Structure formats: structure tokens, C-alpha cells
Amino acid sequence: MNNVTLSNIKQQASIFYELAMTVLDWLNYINRISKGQDILDESSFKYPITEYLERKKDAFCGLELNHPIFKRKKVDVVWRYANNSSSIKSEQEWEYFMELKYASNTDVQRIFDDLCRLYYIKKKYNSSRCYFLICGEKELFVTNFQNKIIQSQKSIEQEVEEKEYKGNNQPP
Image (cartoon, rainbow, N blue to C red):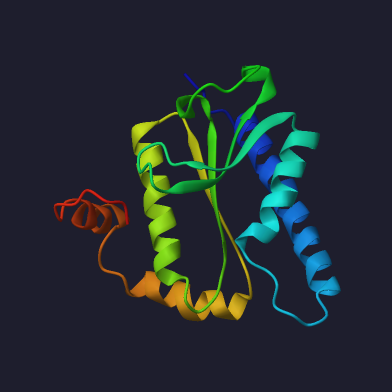
């Protein structure tokens, strides 16, 4: 059982701050060398995330692995710290799950779907930690996502349950 302490919270916050700064540095680098082309997408920041986790935090990482509940879907990044296991044999052994998105005008539903799938991982594996990282222009986020979140009347759980129980049991 994981004990939540102020020390644990500070350690996790530090790790994710460093991880966010690593991704930001990488995206800035890619943006500088792109010659004005829009080449950024969610796969653009899988590399710096796994590099950071494997090299600085001694973690075992996996990319685009099968979702533990919705088998036809993938989870962008999963990992487990090396001190907890020498090998990964099944999806139940992953400790951390992360979905990534590069924000654009058309991603509102895809972002919602990723959040719902993370919710179901957390619901099934209560000890796992789920994270969602979104990158992109702040104006796009505010216009396309923040305003829609504020306008929403339903919780994520209600939305997911409505979609799941329409008879086909397919993920959002």
C-alpha cells in the first residue's frame, strides 16, 4: 500500500516538473529546426519523456502498449521504476500511465477520449498513477478546451458510462 506523505508529494512534483521542462526544451528545439513547418504532434514528445525516465530515473518504459481494459486502444507511455522489478511481464505491473496530446483545433474529442481511458485505468488499478500531458499554443487550449470544460454539465464518469453502455462496450 502506498503511503502518501508530504515528502512523496514533493518528490513526485519535482520529477514531473523536471519532465515537463525536458519536454519543453525538446519541443523548443524541434520548433527551432523545423523551418516554419508545423511538425509537432504527440509523437514529438514521447522521445524526451522516455529518455528522461530511462536515463535520469532508471525506469523501464513502454510506448504505444495495449490499453489494459480496451484492448484495441493504446496507451502512449507506460513505465515502472527499475527498483521495483527487473522485468515487466504483464500490463498489471506498470505503475504509471501517460497519455499525450499536442493541442489543435480538431483534438477536443480525442482528448476527452484519452482522459476517459485514463480514468478507467485508475478505476481498475487503484494503485496506478495516470497522467495527461497536453502541449501546444495556449490560445488554442483556452479557446477549444477550457471554455468547453467550463460549459460542460456532466462529469467525465457520466459521459463514459453513457458511451460504454450503449450496447457495444467499445471504448470512447
